[in-house]
Length: 420
Image (cartoon, rainbow, N blue to C red; front, side, top):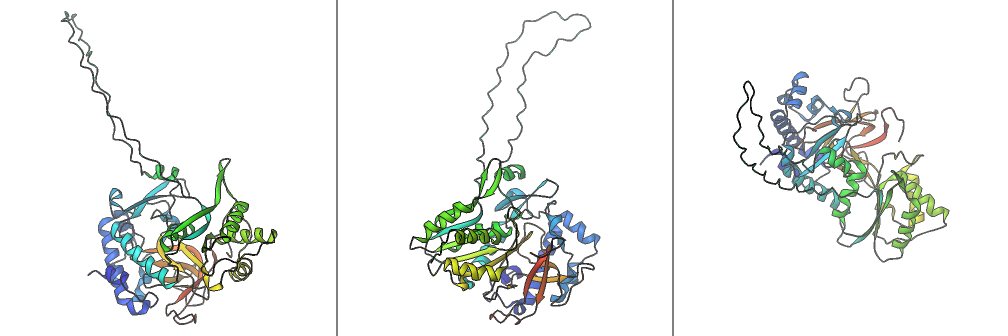
């Protein structure tokens, strides 16, 4: 049994210290696999003189060169052929180029096991159908491939009558040659997927913060009806706050749980709209709110979580324990849900390091720095160690008081953008 399999089959998901040796072995397996199957990644590690055999203890994980998330958006580091991936995606980089990526079958299986265990731990799984308010964009269906027509057989020309060749000149070739038929364009090319609305973070499975919450929502509880906040209009996207407020009021009249998922700042605006209408709801006791912390450029203003939760509890009637923060990072496929104290604990499937913004050396607990996330989940892409643009603070084991034994991190801002 591989170390990766041992790691992702563990049931105690918030006791990473007990799995340090397994995690270390899985990372060595992962790095060796990618170095043997991705030439660009091998060149990066060789240039930085990194050897996977130098990983002798869990503290040595800091030696793995972290790849900046911004780099991954513009570069393809596939270790599995694109056509053999279970999920194929593409991401648009800052320079406008698209990078293909995705998830292989084995990693997708372990990812589902991880999601199930984390959902169950956070009491998100239910067989009861729910109505959904998605504080994001409705995913577009990919374009259907157009089956190329078979080329008509060329008509064989009649043999021309023999002619007397003029002296010094050659007879021209009068036979019509059929046009060369090129190989039909693949439907799931990066450009086609971009037009079809497939976005991803650094090209693997589209697991950006809001996108992941949307993608996994239907796995936790079946959907009865769904309303989306972001709509297309006049060539640009707009947030239809009035529309989702109307949908939420309609859902509140049904004896069915409501799940509100998406960006916290759109949620804040939704609550403001309900207050403006003098509406106070009493949603079912098993309704849930799952928010990602990213700033949405379409809406200004901050969204302090604690105050927002208390305010929304008064307006929606949803229990405080049924509010969850969600954190996701570009290039990193692990799911982070907040505990009852609204902190992100590191599960057994990953490790987190805070790096000094100037030296990139590991920073002590309590000191802010760049968040470096590490996991051996993906075999399809060389994203084992990713340096995010998030500024975070780390706290050690047992410091939270929620019952989870693992360390936790708190995101305090974005590099160059100030506090979130």
